[in-house]
Image (cartoon, rainbow, N blue to C red; front, side, top):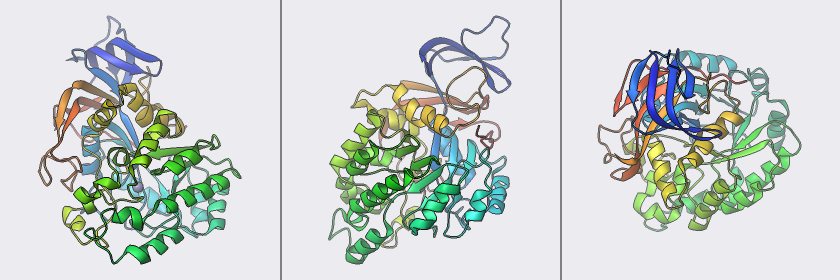
Length: 440
Ligand SMILES: [Zn+2]
């Protein structure tokens, strides 16, 4: 179906434009002034903002094999409700995605089941370089390297292997940057403690030094190669400082959880904010905001990593790491940026324009005539009420969210995916319209 969105305020790469938008055959046919001959269903936007659909380059939608925690259908639906139209999924599943054959199988599994456009990363191991070499850069968004153990058993600790991957990978290489040796040492010391003994327990068991040492090393190695390299979930002020001197083929991300909370919040949330790397301290959180503002951190990705409530209720050493972060993303970002007077354009840059540019997504990203019509209608004056924990109104399968019970500023009114109206006023329409992403 074609659409004419009347009276929208559009955030284009060049700036803000008021007018109408025409969606024709799944693409933006006109942005600003719609020709008289234009035909389509009229949607009265009444001055709401039209943003490009957000692009989340870091999610764990748990398929294959961990579908009790989440599925592509449920988690992409939660992402969509928060204004996200593209999600790139991590490979630490069961089995992990470590070969071309498994990647192809996963892509087949997702066909027709994702509300968002999707791409799937491939995981590096100590001995799958032959597979990594064969990856198609037009279809595979990247290789994920876990330098420290987290959820799943993907881990690469040999420096020589990391060098070979950077030398030979035909696609962007993404790093979970923590030093496994320092984490093992800290674990020995803190493992037998409880949250009652140590209020910031997880920040001690996964200490700042592990991140700093790993990222310092990674940045030195990055200079030997030209392969694009992306550092995921940066959490410390020292890493932000190190990244200020990074070469241009290195990019970096932080996540909403690290911008919203710090280790000072562990006494309230305990395992429910246990994720890797750990939340750090107030000075770190402030440095992340600074890094985003000055361009040192280009990307905001969610690291959406659902676990069941019962899994999180276990004692500290048994509770899995990861926090669900989808369902309310755009209102969440808009709300936490208020105190810093950040305009909507700021989040469009960090969570759409920059990822689209860095990943070279084909015909997706900014609102641009001829591109696929992935768009979000957003009312910055509206409100979004996040349901309490375990409420069936959560879209994510685990039915809990660290923002439970809060009232957020701003409301996602409607979302179009490839020109299909997929979400409107809290309801989902049609079949999942997500397609596999392509890269230029
Ligand atoms: Zn992750």
